[in-house]
Image (cartoon, rainbow over the protein chains, first blue to last red):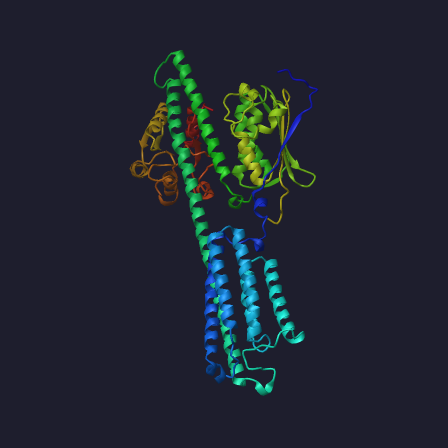
Length: 477
Length: 135
């Protein structure tokens, strides 16, 4: 390939994808329950309704015996408890059926909305017949308000509350203001004192209704808090298992490194024994074979290490990262020292302009990032070339590291693919057969983990420039 | 001439290392597990211990032996320790910071397998306080 100085450099930018930004889309208060928990709650809601049905039907049956209600000075209820119970039975069966057959989260939420709406309508009827203002029955709306706060989002539960207010207001307006409905109460007409029920009966009813409401609220709240505690426990248990799995994975990685590298170390050592004459003289042809064995051993060992690094990075979460403050001067010097021997072999000189800038993260990850980029810069430079490394703060105080070589360069059409695993340009393979093609994939993973923007500029025949723009350091972290 | 103890479960590798070090004029003993190594060191204190990290029955037995030598044994406290291991010393995957902390694991030096003989000879000479021509 002939290099043309007039060709402008092609550029490509690897945009960082931060794990954390993906996770924060749904606000905590808007998150729905898990599917299984929703189904469980719908069934529980229906079971709870059977109790209400039994109570209403019981009251209706007692009302059939005129003597009992007369004794307490109450009005015979007539058929409304039976009609209400029947409507509740039918709707409850329908909701239970739907809960078992329509199990998608959206369908379950519709089911819950249906139950709460039907309940509120029926409850308004019950409130009217029992006595909307004469008794404290209206407090039973609280059950649905509390339940909707648990099942629905803040906005949705407010809608339920407004529905309850609207229905109760409509009932009392129709009964006492507009007088569309006759005034109703379980007590003998309480608004006309001459026929009023005995005060004791009214007090006793309100007393037991109040206690009943307290008990139901206790039941609802304790049931819900038990549910929350169980979820907490399950979450803690899941977390414990995840930590154990993470430790197991680390141990597995370690064993794998050892199992894969140890045999090569033995082969390498034995080949060195032959090559260095510890086992006597061998022919020149045999020496050449031994040298090839050594070379392949060294390359394979490096590849195993890169594969393990990549696997380790792929399964590392941001949450588990240590937030160590690292000064770029020491870090970059260390990274340069790692590639210095190869650079010397190839007659490549480093030109450095490194200002002290602080990076926050795991030191090992930054080492992987810079060693891979520096090693590429050295390997793909022409003999006696130059690799320049600069580090400074950008205009917004963001750390910027630039690694530039005057090597073989990357053709413009191939730039977007260089961060893919095992991808190597034809030119790169011709220049250096030994690389695994994993170095830039490792760089990409580290960049994604830390939100680092990488801008690559390259001109075939003239070199490549990697500009790394780190996120601005959050001083509060 | 120094007395060097190599503790490594990989006999092939240990033998080649021993050959190289014997060739340098040292007296070399090989132990294939850490328990025998402790016994051997108590019988005859080496001038240098070359330890592997992972052993079949315990993946960090080499680290534990190093800790034992440094913290629990008066006799073995001052012996220089060279960790010669397949674990990458630049990016020690799988080990926590505690494992590679200097106070917690005060080994004298690390070398990663596979190792070039001249690097090994040079490092051993340095640890024994001898100058070497090899670089």
